[in-house]
Length: 302
Image (tube, rainbow, N blue to C red; front, side, top):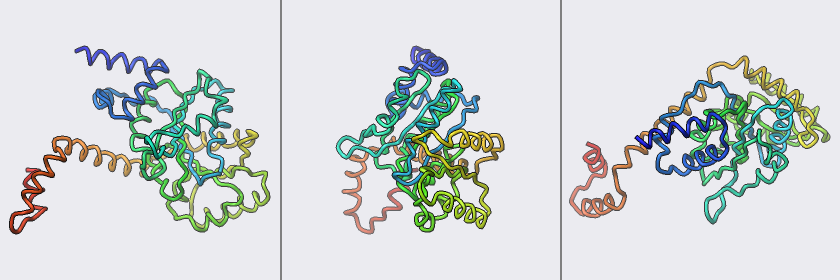
């Protein structure tokens, strides 16, 4: 009974924006600590909080753009949460906290919550627990949730499944990259932000991108920005609002959720099996004549 009351209290604290509770709950979910699974069952999703994914190649200025978006929203007295996915430390699989450093001007603002998340080797530019962490934030009192990916290139299409609006950040020199990019990265973008657009070739690159999108019949907005000067952010948010209002059913999200459900179901199924016990059984079974791994597995599952 105490555990149920405790979970109710956690849910209430999340909804009221208690920063300590938010931080502790995210850690609990990210590290799959005791009580995490039970808490996830209690979450509610009645709020329509936009989740904005920021992705693109390294060096395009993703963190600077998120920083600029935060500054824009703070003027409107909005509450913002940021999950900044960093490459994992090779020593302890923790986040390198790079984005906290880059966004330090907003770190102590009570309306901003920034959490660096370690990718822990997960492909796709995200973290293996990013879905659950977003679900926790959706139960808080934020107006916007941003997810900034690692920036590993073409494998980042996963962001389109979790974000309501996906922004792909490019720079004027990205012409060759665009030609080399697989269609997957091009297709996930709801908005292209041409950052560092004060550089030479920005207008030409923007026109090239427009022609490419027209050829692909892709309905994506293109906005030029200079994030470090907070230029173009107002136009970017006009595009975000336009996309959010006209938002259709996210087919990509359905595919991702089905895949996530599959993974979680498989994970729960495997909890009743101990690897070392399985190893000992395999050691004995493989010595028998005509050992068949598939029949062995079938017998274990029935």
